Image (cartoon, rainbow, N blue to C red; front, side, top):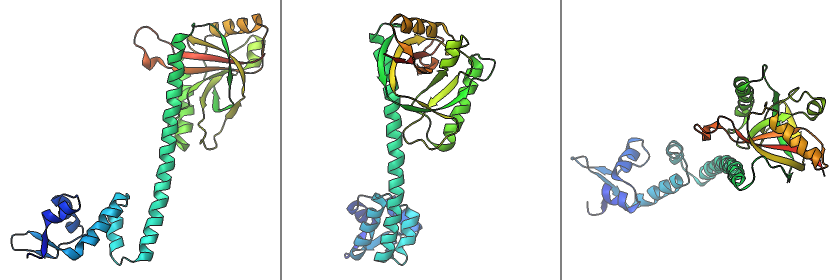
Length: 274
């Protein structure tokens, strides 16, 4: 048996464990050429290229079931088909991971905004250019209160869950300009979830235009008009003109706080004409 390779030697040669080779034997993927009376497995030098190829395919992420099926009647054409199929699977996985990476970046951007707010005067408005955004929108469930606010938002989250990853671009509320100007600011107001760049088609999609926005940080619920009134007073005092709906963007919800705050930390964004 000097010309044969023990299971331990074959495993070590390929960076595997003995148990792995035993498993490969059990599933008829890679069998020893000899098993002695004590049950010890031995392999031939000629089997090395086969195990090397199995290790290569496995390192690419090809499943063992596919490898087993492939090695029954293996030929270059079959291997090309196997690899082409696996390449498509890899490309789909890359696309999925890219979405996850972008979702992480978007969530980090939201938290960076909240952290940077600590260096600014709270409730002191400022002007900032903001790019165009897409969102899905639903009017608040009546009567407007904290419980129904959560229910409204969750109905939008379910819409997102049907078609893509968990929403990562943030959420908030939209307060209609015509309602603000008419003195009934909550008329037609509702929750929104900002859509990611890869989002598929959704119902109730609205476009939030690019503009210069008068912005103000605040702690409070979106149906509390105290802060919107303060922002509108600042806009008028400084000679600006409201040009569209006011967006109430949630930066940190109450899950980040214990006792000091029972409200979300948000940024009001009002598009203005300079």
